[in-house]
Image 1 (tube, rainbow, N blue to C red):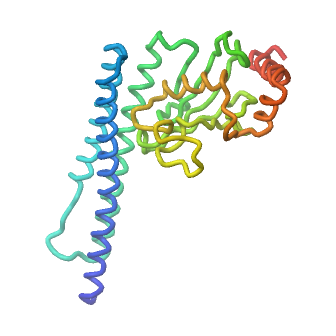
Image 2 (cartoon, one colour):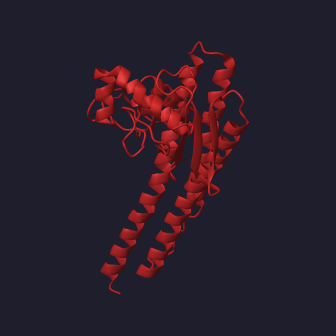
Image 3 (cartoon, one colour):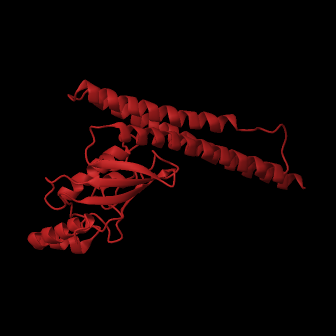
Length: 270
């Protein structure tokens, strides 16, 4: 192999190596900034000490997981003593990327397992039941038992699925209702569209602020509580189901009748 080709392979390998490490490093720094922000705001908040302690511990736990992922990626980094051959460099890059990806996925799995166990044992979360789909910690089956106080869906039982990405908690899960539902913020396919499930980036249309979107300090519990609240208070500014939004605005009685029919169907009464 010509020296020029070898040097180019070396440069390409360095770029791949830096890209893989930068991805994990960026994740760690993002979590660190989120942790600093939430602890600062909580320290100035009048909320109860118990609530402050809970969220602070949650933020610290996530930060430690991401820090472990970063360390795992750094440990796997191999610096060869000389310019390697192309196949050697490609093999190293593959191993590095696989190690970084596995570390990140492992951290997400540990966090999700902990959060699932916490939700299953927490008796202060009424109306929410969670379990795994095919023993996969990244796929949750959820049952929402809607309180009778809900104007539209009170008394209903709605099944849904939460699908978490390997990048969790840096990126949000997707939520999809499996029980039929008619709502301005739920696509006809059942996929839920609310701010907390949108990635942490600027909204180009100006409907949402960054604070309303997903952040690593959120959790499956906060998602499901937000969805239950959404069922009672639709947001029609940017509807996922235009027909539902139109009926909710122009024919509220008809909208409520349709919702109540779906409630009966969810109970097997129709």
